[in-house]
Amino acid sequence: MVTLGAPVALEKIMKLAMKNAVKHRALQRNVWGSVLLMLGMGFAQAQVAGSSDAVLQSYLPAEAAVKDALLTSPLIEGARARRDALSARAQGIAAGTAEFTVRATAQRRREVGPGVSVQESMLSLERPLRAWGKRGMDADLAAQTQALADIAYADALHEGSRELLKLWFEHLRAQADLKNAQTTFVLAAQMQRLTQSQLKQGEISKLDAELAQAELDRISAARAVAQAQLATTASALSRRYPTVELPRADMNGLSVETGDKLGDKSRVVTTRNPSNSVDSKPALPAWPEGANVAMADKRQEFLEKNHELNMLRVDAQRLRLSAQRASRDRLPDPTVGLFTARERAGAEQVTGVMLSMPLSGDARSHHAVAAAADAQAAEDQVRWTEQQLGATFDGMWQQLLHKRNATEWLKSAAARQAQAADKARKGYALGEGSLSEVLMMDRLASDNLNAAERMQLEAVALQAMIRLDLHQMWDFDE
Image 1 (cartoon, rainbow, N blue to C red):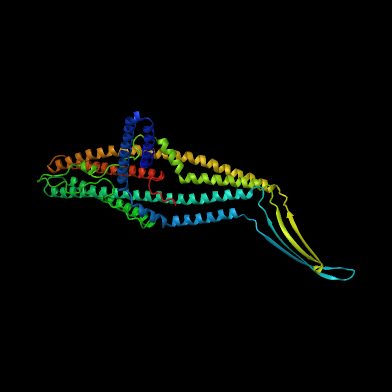
Image 2 (cartoon, rainbow, N blue to C red; image 1 turned 60 degrees about the vertical axis):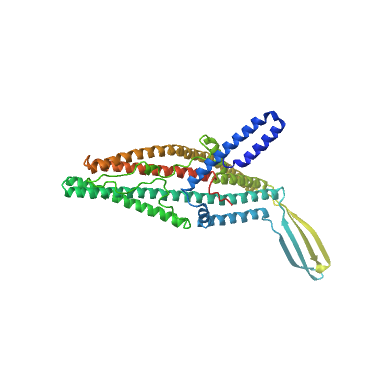
């Protein structure tokens, strides 16, 4: 399937088609027709993908601001320090622990018979050798440790991006809840003012007026809770990532007008089409890959690019190399050296070579067995994590598909309920229906609109999270 990265592939297809066309001139017309068709499909899909990206980006913060916020975050700075520490350890593994040893001795020799006393001394230089191929194994282990350092840092960047994305959409949902609470508050306040006017004119009972006041109090409390939640999410986002500007209140994708919809019984109530409040903003961003993309293909891509899983894979390989190195340590390393001695006050000069070999015990074998068990446990953890992450991705994919459908259904329900509530308000303003019916219709319309808006935000958040996990956005790996 042709995706956003299609220009290179299309160029290769064109070259191949031209080559075949030269060889088989009778097929030139069919070949060029196929090429043009594929080009058209590729560019059409690229346009759809570009449009989808534009819609999705309208919900997200600027990429440059996200990158700056992540790179200056204490979390990422700590990850960078841990990467430097692992890099230094990798260099230490490659260098090895063997060191030169200098030995110097001084002694006095005394001959008992003649009573002669002479000065003697010896100087030696020795060093253990990494034998039995251990130097090459240490080099491989150092390279694997460096790879672990790099991928651990990339994983920290990715997890920071995921956290920022979650905080961002939590704030958007809080904005949607507050907007819904403010809308219902305006309607309830208008209803309360109308009922007070009607009560003074003796058109309604005191019970209806108290019912309208109680509804206003309930909605006021809900608005206060929504304001508190918005302040909480704003604080969490701004304190964790201060360089990221908070989202505007109009980024939620749905809107509703809060003008005077009740009016007075003596005048005609004019309102807009309620369905426009649901469809006034861009719809859900489409999948750039199209509707026929297989979940299994995306799952495989997700597992190949997942930092957590790749970090476990690299660590398992590192532990396996460490186990092989521990097994090789059953063969002890020899120590070689040179020495020179001055005996009998310099009358004799001695030079030579030293060789020593430790006699290994059971500890080396036990250490090798333990290292092999650690490596096996890490490999088992990789398989278990791969199963878990695969199930997680399948769940996210299925949720996205169903929530996209649910969004459309909720938007349709919200539009119909808004029309019904609008008619109920008009009828009540003209003396038809009861106040309780109007309040219930308004509450249902508000709840449906809020549910549609929240569902759309959840679907967009899921799509953004999947694209982030597939490294199709905010890919800041260094």
